[in-house]
Length: 401
Image (cartoon, rainbow, N blue to C red):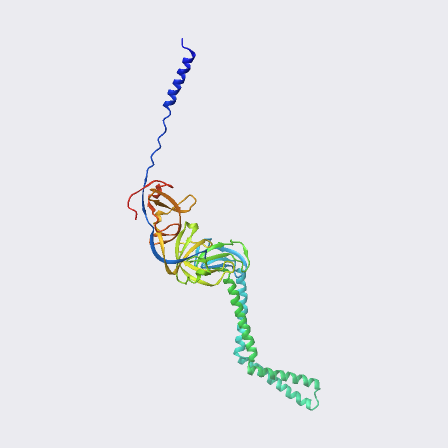
């Protein structure tokens, strides 16, 4: 029979053996080097560039409305539709204005007839009638005068005969002379006035058709058939977007370097930083009171209408001097989760790569300019950068360029 102490020693020994079997430390996994290719940034000579921010604007724009009031009967265009100068956009009910044309035409015909009559003078028949009436009145006057001289006719009766004789004589004189100059002028003036009234009413009829004042795109449509519109109320906005205009503000220190006709590159951040080439159209001569910048307008071709009025734009305007810059291939530039632009730098003494944030500039000779963050002596990863990590071990696949 074994004692209690024997069993205790046996258990301790067994425990010690068990503990010794599980005491071996884990072996760390060996880090694998990622193959990459590296090179130094290229040093190139390019034109200086003046950077400025601004907005995209229509080259021409117009808010259009009818010149007369009325009820809209038809609308021919929709928002976003391309239109040509002179194209009909909408129509009003023109019946009331057409009635005005008919009335004015009748009045014009009557006035023209009176003017023609005054210009032509007295007709032969009217002259003969006036002559016959005068001869009759003259004969009556002579006979009554004889009686009056013999005191056989009362003075009042003779005065009536004499007045009739004078009227007949005046009518004969007028018939012989024709219409007076002032009467002819008055008749011709009324005829011209009536003709102008016809033109005015005809214009009102024409104004019931609203046409596009310029070639462009319908940016806004503010009316529908059946609506009553007032004269001058805007019902469409038309914009000319090709070429489009980019307005930027250039600081006073840089404005002397900007000249009309210089090439420019416009970048739209909301379109993924896509570049659009253009040319400087106008350089302002007065600074904005608040920003103290000078307005510069850049014309950019926009045949596909991808640029829209109101977009935020960044511009680089080519200067008149040259400068040395460094560039890297576009594929060497990566972005972190926050969207910042990075490149990986190779450190030979550590055989590892580390990310460095850089500021990119314009495209130069099929590469991308690095405005800040790199030096000409840095070794940047130009192939294999998609497989590396911060501080990762790498292996060069070729000699550093």
